[in-house]
Length: 129
Image (tube, rainbow, N blue to C red; front, side, top):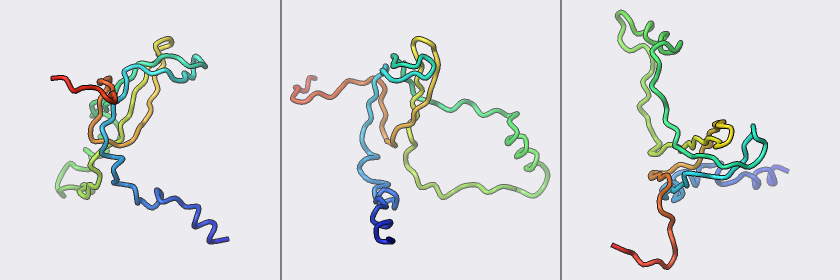
């Protein structure tokens, strides 16, 4: 029984493929995509853009609490993270339905180079200069 349970564990769960060739490929995503819209309840055309985090608010509770803790003597009060291991971030696509303007976010794999609406690769084409 234990042998069966161990054999069902995939190699991906052990991190064997973690920094493999998959993370290094160039990703090219079209600017429009036809996919399911929850509010329209059918497949619709979506406008695709890359998600970018907004400016951090000074009045968010965590920031106010951190600033309050930092005041006065005593130096740095919270741990500063220094052991950065990842070289890439997961790409998040922000998709907006062209009919109802409802937005959804979809995360895709890690990559070093991401392109939105670039030229498609074609096999057997001549390279033009």
